[in-house]
Image 1 (tube, helix red, strand yellow):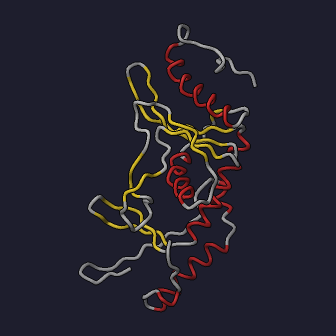
Image 2 (image 1 turned 90 degrees about the horizontal axis):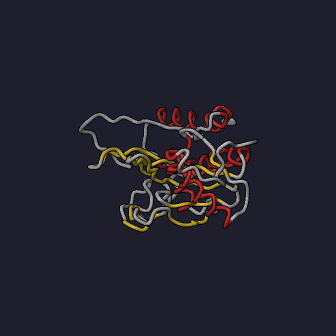
Image 3 (image 1 turned 180 degrees about the horizontal axis):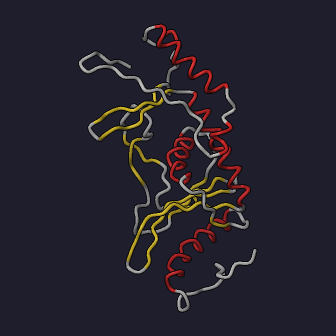
Length: 232
């Protein structure tokens, strides 16, 4: 398909605002071609890019997907990040963690790369996610595979919300130990309803979720009146 404003050309005098934007993608695509030559292009995947951030980082931490950190974008921006190893963990141990912020990360198996970088134009600056692929078909395949991997990851543990001093945060139980159904302390009829709901949900093929690119997962909300003892 013919492109009127190619990355091979400079448009500083003709279209300066476009050039402010193009200089970033031009540098990233050059970096990608140095590591994996192909027809790299930006692909718009909508709000899925935001969902991908935490999901991909968690998969990378759990070695569920191969990746390669190609480099940073702006030297004047943070080049690394220190935080809790996993936002889904009960632990609060600070470590050096992977991040898409100011970093180009390649997923060679799928010929896809992701970064979150600042755009600078007209005296303004704003962060934005960028999703690169060698083809739209490859990008679609990547999203489908990630959704399936995320489904498998979610089925291995229980994710719940915890009210902390920093607000409501997601936590995961089950990373180190499996919990048998008979170990869940609830009235039998409540347990049966919950387990039946979970079983029926995952017996489906998840077509609706896959069609719309949604994580295939089941959420269960339990309520306990105030002043009653609550244990996990």
